[in-house]
Length: 210
Length: 297
Image (cartoon, rainbow over all chains, first blue to last red; front, side):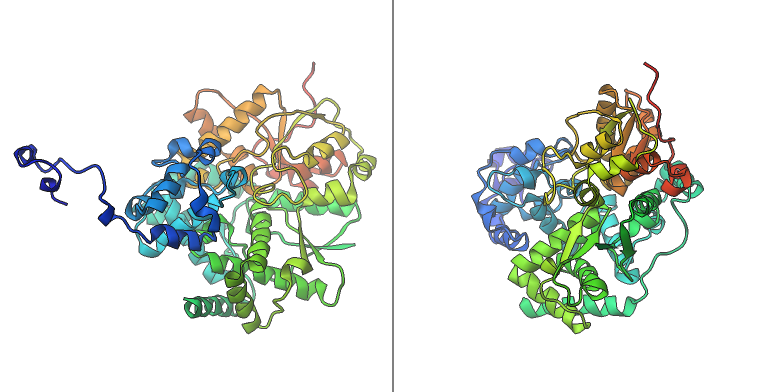
């Protein structure tokens, strides 16, 4: 976007750092809201009255760059880029307070999940941010072994974000080993071939319904 | 009645004391339970963030395994005990979506059939039960009271339910003010402490990813629990227990108010009141020793 688009010619001297702070309708992704509504099984998504109950009841909204209420409004309006790159969708700890309290019965937690899935699929989450990294590493471990191994997961997250993270968890980790609550043993199911076949069949089913 | 049991990944590692105490308590109450064979991960909150349909299918395999192991040809649904509240809520959520959403149902059921499982009626054929539900409603506080050998007179106990046990599906308790753990605490002879944060989020996996956010949530719970005079906080979820117990040192170096609160599983306290050994209930695995004696007045 050119600064010239929005400022009178005599102001362009202000330099490269001046950016337009609003978005024109033509730049929005008009289909975004409908895609998310479909992914989040949300026929009720468009009935949101912007009351803000979700933001009030959310235990982490004060850490979010956009509150849940704003996310809903932004999704509906088509701010795809901003929403998918936000920290909000990853800070959602999936406690379902918003879903339980929404007067319109919108499944807001599912909306957050749909946004996370799309952000991962399109690779647009904040880089080296540990929450999406954890989701992907968890997914990979379970896909392969059928069960999660907590120690392995923590190692993988550290390697993909910042190995020094492990120092922060060293004390707790050692205590877990000492009390027999952690081990190096990798958990796994017996019938891994069957699980693999099942997940492949799901992939095929998804392709067929597209 | 026989129950099947789905441990989930956490109960085999950080949540080991939960598994040990659940099994011991049910054994002392003569409740027969059997582990689900070759169960797989429920997907938890992380897998759902990558692929929802696969997440439902992971749960569906577990449901199909339960039917295969115990439910074939029965009129009554299989009773599947699920102590981890993440597994509990994910299995329930999958049942709802597979039944209620035709697009989800079609893909998941077809995939299950392809690998040779029965796929119809998984929501009706398997009843997902939390051990709190089984203890409070099937066994009942009266029978638990009879088994108590060491009453916990005067011990101030805080019941903490966490989020996923009652949300989004409150199957056996009130979503805003659950009371099943309360009734069990009273049956043990302890003092029940009422507090407003029974179902507020503990921080979940944020304590392992973004500590500045995750630890604050847990800290707020512990601070309020201490303010109310609680001497022992009880949880019903392996992640709640881990977040609230294991990071107290980190919370104390980060935040102003100092917390020091024993955090145990409700099943551990029941076991101790039944006079089971520390080993039976996994008490030696806790970072902060479980408190059983009320402070002198």
